[in-house]
Length: 408
Image (cartoon, rainbow, N blue to C red; front, side):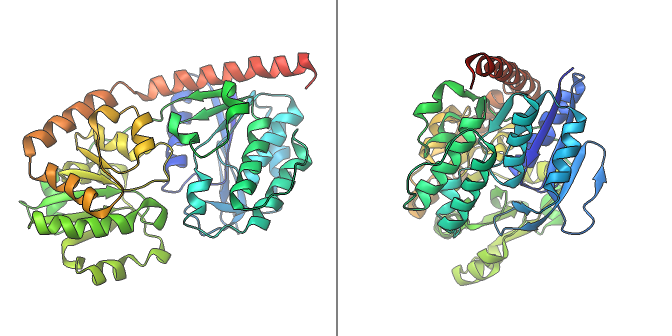
């Protein structure tokens, strides 16, 4: 039996890919007799106490479900040290991620870091002050192995230095896809990287696709373009809305179905009103797993406009539901397990709209794409995910022993 302490600055209870992957992984590991504890950010006051979850009071950062953990981190570290994990698995680069790497170093246990979040990509959509990144990097430097470096001239350099501190402290770096590390300078750490695709696990649909359409006021014969995920700038929602306006010019009965929580700063309703698409778009907010499966069943094509995702768990969900996929991220497409079944377009409204409209207008081709995607997705099972992650833990333990022998 292996005892794994997971650390995430993205709320474990949130609607985000990091939380989904941790929930899936801990569940699969539990079925094999391994124990997990998840250290996560919680509410500022009265952070809940649950079996297997340690919540640290935190404040929102404005970047999705990422939150900034506050001072009780020291008490949390004491609790984790008392639990005596065999492995520390860090999932985010924030204060809790740094705490996880610190605990691993103090206990002398292997550290695994999964690069879930493309921080360079997020920096293109959110203002991340370089001094803040520098301060975080200095925090890492107090506890981790890498010493201070030269002057950090811009946000890219500051993020890269923070990445380097984390990569240097991790015995194994897990990438959900080979393209996840595309923006990073990784040459010095390439030997530590393991590519492990994060699959999806769809619960049974809560209703039929026809029932879902009726519940949400979608016409039975409408052509439905679906997006599932956080409705925010970094997910490419503005590109999707502009492209959908062009789709409507080709497919008169097209309806846009948006499933997921909305970032207030996106001002989604205003975007839809200004584009003249409010009457042709349905927003549901966050849904439970069975309802999300029903949304896939009710749709004709899945639109994925994001250029900041490292894994795209929703792509696996759409594939398992047999929904054809159109995406715009060339590098993610090239390294994704579903590449052979997904349609790729340029990240421009006209090109994206053409790809979506083409599948809506060719049902036989859409069904073929969906069936092909489903057959590939079924090969990437949760059980395989657990097996490959356990191997990463074993590789990390071997590396940790070599570091001790080498005196590092």
